[in-house]
Image 1 (tube, rainbow, N blue to C red):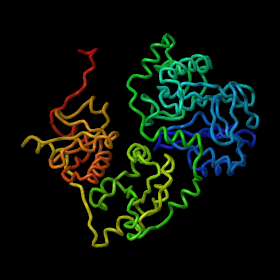
Image 2 (cartoon, rainbow, N blue to C red; image 1 turned 120 degrees about the vertical axis):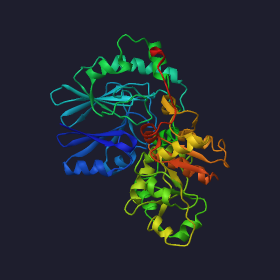
Image 3 (cartoon, rainbow, N blue to C red; image 1 turned 135 degrees about the horizontal axis):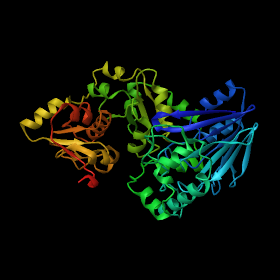
Image 4 (cartoon, rainbow, N blue to C red; image 1 turned 90 degrees about the horizontal axis):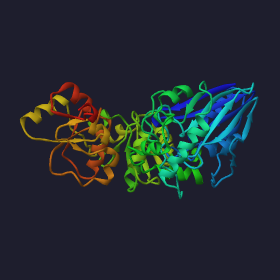
Amino acid sequence: MYVKQLYTGCLAEAAYYIESNGEAAIIDPMRETEPYTTLAEDRGAKIKYIFETHFHADFVSGHIDLAKKSGATIVYGPTANPSYDVHVGTDNEEFKIGNATIRLLHTPGHTPESSTYLLIDENGKNEAIFTGDTLFLGDVGRPDLAIKSDVTEKDLAGMLYDSLRNKIMPLEDNLTVYPGHGAGSACGKNMSKETIGNLGDQKQNNYALRADMTKEEFVAEVLDGIAPPPQYFPKNAMLNKTGYTSIDDIMTKGNVALSIEDLENEKDALILDTRTQKDFIQGFIPNSIFIGLNGQFAVWVGNLIENLNQKIIIIADEGKEQEACLRLARVGYDNCIGYLKGGFATWENTSKPIETIKSISAEELEQLNNDSKITIVDARKTNEYNAQHIDGAISYPLDYINSHLNELDKEETQYLHCAGGYRSVIAISILRKEGYNNIIDVAGGSSAIFKNTQLPITEFVCPSTL
């Protein structure tokens, strides 16, 4: 028996390949099919099943395309009712993969159809559980993402409590836990950086598996501090439920080299610059926005570009154009219509206008603040700001920038930072497009500010230590 985790860091998402005696199963595949079909071909195996743990909200699964290419059967847990052919499994139903067995455990809570898959080896021994978003390492899935459901988040949290205690916790401590996500995913709030764990360790260390926890305590704790889901989550969940355009067609449409004239003729297209923030600061096409491939590209696209059908033209380093198109498609942005041939250099080598962003060091920010009162804007998440921030800085989280575009003063010079410099440039590019021309970037963000300056800082102090 062979198990391989295929982890996608940008989305903190784990898919799985399971194989026994020439037959394979895939759990929660990403949008692209090639990694799974190639792995099966290289190992001389045939993909028999594609198991989905639930209707994913944070990415578009590749299950439909993969099933068409491999002939595999898509399996969902009870209550799932997608708009395409699947096998809707029953609780404790078993599926044979060669000499191994996969047992479906219905574990509602993250969503009503959420299921965990128990892997049983050739000798009938329980080996591992593939928990999707039911159980993470250090956390559990948020219970507020059900689509078009009449159950509340409190109802789902109660279901999750029961699922964990009735289906997961009675299993053997030595089982390997293969979760659907690791740290960085918005599907939970306290996930470990580790991506493979042990059930016994989770019983000891995961707050949600405390043996003495009542259902009321669990519901209160699992719902506490959950930030609103990114705007693209329900849209992706619906695509996963109703179906989508073939990834091959999307990649073909996006693999078109455009001229400057082509770009300028597409008046309703968004120009998305995917280079590094350093390159963008030094020069960019007017009205383009920056979201670099070197960061959590797909997550920020999903947070900030509200229309999944938005036409998008890519500005990318040579050789990165197809990567950008694929990473857009992973979160449901299927309308990439091409890329500027030659990238930004093509635009730069004309007489057309180029914009830049002024950037200063943390030390320069400190000197300016000492000389006179200045306005500092903090684009980090609210919890980051609350933990530690410059005295008097305005909290202006990038996550919600589209709802607050008119809240800053367009005439005032403002100094904007995030934690390291990636998010601040995204924010400034969006604000610049909206007519904010006096915002200056602080290079290195709060990491550099807290390390290299003596600017006055407000820090959160836990009340229990007072």
